[in-house]
Amino acid sequence: MSFQRIIYSLLSIATLSSSWAFHHVPNRALLKNLHMTDSSLAIEGIEDKEEDDDEWEYVEFESLTEADLLGSEWLVGTCFDKSPNKIDETWCRLVCNDNNENIAIWGDNSEGKWALDKASQYITISKNYLWGKQIWACVVEDYYYLAGTVRSWSFFSAAAVEAQWQARRLGVDKEEAGIAPWFEEEEETESENDSLSEADSKAIIEEA
Image (cartoon, rainbow, N blue to C red; front, side, top):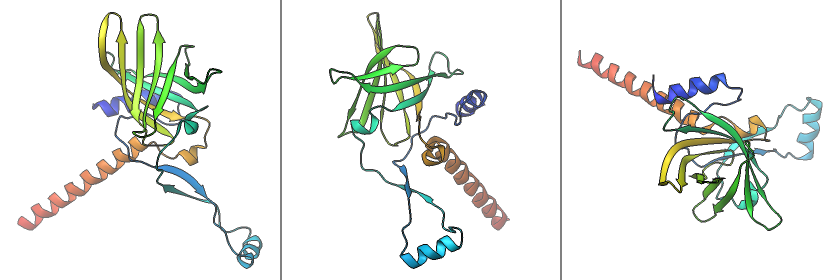
């Protein structure tokens, strides 16, 4: 069974509305566009019991700022290299304290700091321990989902990458957030593989 399938199976058991699978994802954000009509069309729409429903469409976003992340809460799944068949789940809230410091509050009552470099769209979220810290980091490529690696540092060992992680923004409409992009890429890959298999089969038939 592949690494991706193991992760999918584990998280299907958990009480999540979406599962994890570690992939690179494209830039996108899902915004709701309300289609405006002139007065005559509006009247006709009312008479027809509002035939035109709200529609959703994907649009590109240029970049996020700290204001887009401030106050947000994330469901975080982490797969550590030492336990590749286990996903550690928790939540993380990104806030700002009275001293204007960006503070990350974790589900286990741990705290750390978070920062977003607007130019590179690189986010870091730390968790502090008495003996060191862990840092969840990635390039922000999606408004609703994050995915990257976890680095650790302690007084007893040098900094090193020790895990992969993915996160889903909480407190938003599920339809608005859409399908996790790592699953979209998986479906595209499977579709491409199917297309290649069909092309190979046709080639074999033609040669025969």
